[in-house]
Image 1 (cartoon, rainbow, N blue to C red):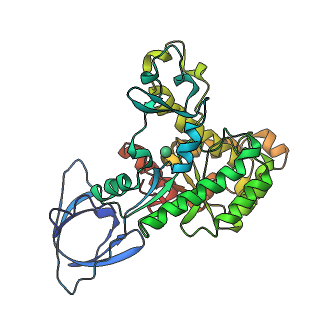
Image 2: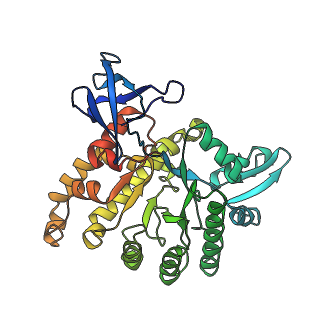
Length: 375
Ligand code: ZN
């Protein structure tokens, strides 16, 4: 159920009727898993074009129990001081460099064009990336109760193997420390030293359980360098499952530039952001599905960025192609496998970063309204 506006007119809330449970004049409203009882004054459709949306007027009185769930933003990035320092110390991408117009962040090698002036390379990096007070102000402005902050791409994927474990410890401690400044308002997804050894990664996953505000980990689609269907990731998935850590899977690498054609340069970042990111996520998760990650780790929970890329739309096609594939059948990989639909409804959470109602409806359809997260 979506509360569209309850700030200016507290006795006039807007809900989606399809999530109301009918009960004459008293109705039980369910917002996420917390029920609240309200007495309804009147209900009428908002607009004939939106038959499931109704304007609901309710009575507020002391004998009405109202416990709306808090708004939790699960997709919101922060660069802690130790990560800013790391990027400032680098001369290759990703890096932060000083320019006459202020510090600028370059995360894509295509943006590190030496023919451009320093002020035109990358993007400005302001307090929105690193200031906690800026984050809290943003949360208050948008009525966000809690943010689960995470490092932005490309995390630590670029570090030499020998530096990754120490950097992950430093940054995770740093993020946990930031959460203590606003207790109850901030939690975090940790970062893993994926360019290091598998042992480094597993050790860090286990260490995270002692950091009070950690609620999982964020990772890209490259895994240990060979993607998320890499058999070498098995101990990592096992440790994440054992520690009950949510894995926030987020794109960074996109698709090879050649797929966008010779005129791609005229289109800025449109094709790579609008299509490359979602397809990267879709391919990465489909590789996990085909390789049976969730058949072996049935309790492994993931949160997929951007509502799973195109996964909700393509789930039926992926399932059909797997089911009818001669090679999978010949190799005995179809026996006892879990369906794509089962995994989507059991192991997958989706954020709501799709910028359109059709995408949101598809996300709810495949994973359920209670698995679609604000963010
Ligand atoms: Zn993001």
